Length: 289
Image (cartoon, rainbow, N blue to C red):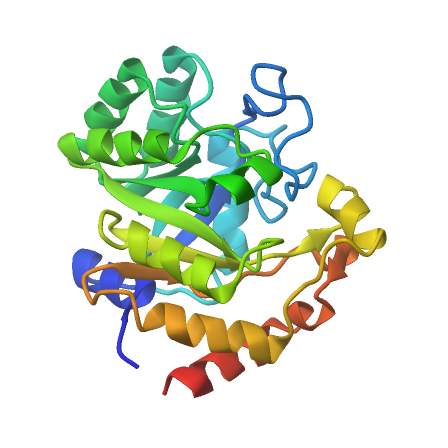
């Protein structure tokens, strides 16, 4: 089954192998600081879904050096994308954002900036800054949508309606920003039909898509629901079958950034099969070929 992988897209765009270096900008989230809620999304860990990012107590430059050291054995002539991953990375004064973004892209081996955020945290001042940075180096904005279905969005405490996502994508495209949309496969109460509807919807507007398996991470409110027997997770076969059907809906011009994901093993409650990432990826690839 043919689809455009992130690896292929990046090689075609930048002419070499490109790795993402995950950074922690020290930001928070309106779903945690009391603006919308204090509990965060129901599935989100204390690390803001950035367990593999850098140390927020270090400077951006130091984090980049640490991350480069980790992948240096794999890479010889490649380049990097500076990726602000945990929490909401446009949720701060623009002066602070500008300082950190510019620090992240200053080196020649950083070819682009990637910013994970919420669609409701993209005010005009932030859009102006992203446009400014995009004139220096390419910018990718990753939006955590998770689902198009409002009942599920309310359950996971997403905190904004679908039209906010629609408007954010429109505004980002107006300034030439590449948009990547995150969806979670296996959210409680959703059928496969619901999941496929989300994929089909976002593929009409997004430039890239990330499909993430629902993980139950200890310490989250979702984990409490799971321990009470109120939440079920997908089996490997179920997940692979859904992913195969998702890929069948993704146009060849939409970049597939991810077909699964893995949580920190020390905190993973379920599904435990997801901890064996190599087997999961091999099973998905076999199903798609």
